[in-house]
Length: 155
Image 1: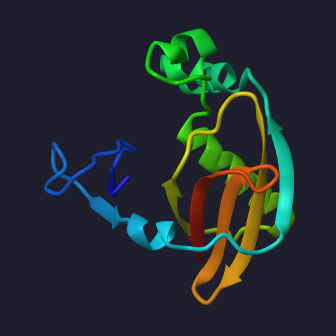
Image 2: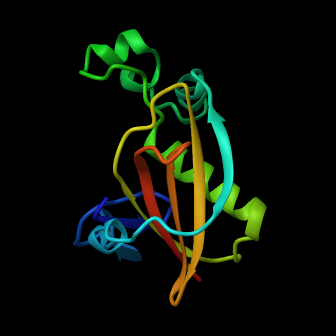
């Protein structure tokens, strides 16, 4: 995600310009290159399982029924060996774990960069550490496996 906007009424309108029908517009430009360059540091905050049904459960609440998230057979049709967790689920799960461990502020900004899909099922570990401008975090496969996501929190 490079850019996202929020228009009055709760519609998400990516890009620049006027919101259809006029109205207020706020745009946040993300700098993924800055997030991607962060080294993975800090202690393991938590380790958790990502069950095989995660993609189906996320689809049930989000309405996003992308076949790569639902089942290994449908994921294989699109070149994946396994079903994979949805990126927004992965980001939300990281934020929930950070909030549980360190109580997030009432208002904050978060930037994330996705590096590798989270295969379903799997075990992952979340690491977090302080930065001058907030906090950084990374999700990786348990046991020093590949990094799935890096992020930073401001606010």
